[in-house]
Image (cartoon, rainbow, N blue to C red; front, side):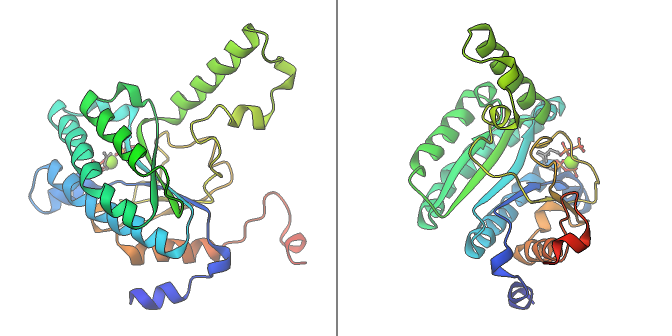
Length: 249
Ligand code: IPE
Ligand code: IPE
Ligand code: MG
């Protein structure tokens, strides 16, 4: 089954960047009569599988939405469990990341993470910084509105300090202030668990992304689900405002 799907992927038309909203851990745990944290723990396997599948295919960047600025509003016990899981997972996965030549990166308001989580994250980033096959970007304490506000403040500062003229601001200037600077926009965004919303993720960067929603709950997401999403993506016509006729040259 897995190999079948994989062989249907056009390797010349791979997205360079896939963004994933990993959702449904809580519902998956509930289905199993377990507390929500059990779902988060089981979500780690899906992260591993997805990362490995993307790297094997040759996708250059994947961004995983792991914790939003809004997620602080969850019960304290759950927030703490997620933060500990982050530390544990990074520490235990670094060796595999290095073995697979994968570089860990992170976007979001990272300084506001608990000190232990921040430290583990920085160590993971430092210890994998020379890897070149794929970037694994974790969105942590991230929200797109936060990111856009930060970019605006930074540009305003530069204007105030006469380093920049307002008239010179263009898309490129703006993008150079975003936390995704230097990384191409995701062509494909996947959300699991059947919710059809973006939840404050990469709003600027997904202006022209193909959106793929699947009912699969995150802890059940496996390589074949990623393959399915990529095949679906490859069968779409990306027109970028043009007509269908213009695209067939
Ligand atoms: C996604 O699963 C994980 C995080 C947001 C951290 P959820 O915890 O949101 O699971 P559901 O949506 O409640 O099922
Ligand atoms: C989005 O999931 C955030 C992450 C996956 C980290 P949520 O479960 O928090 O999203 P909403 O609140 O249901 O939209
Ligand atoms: Mg959710």
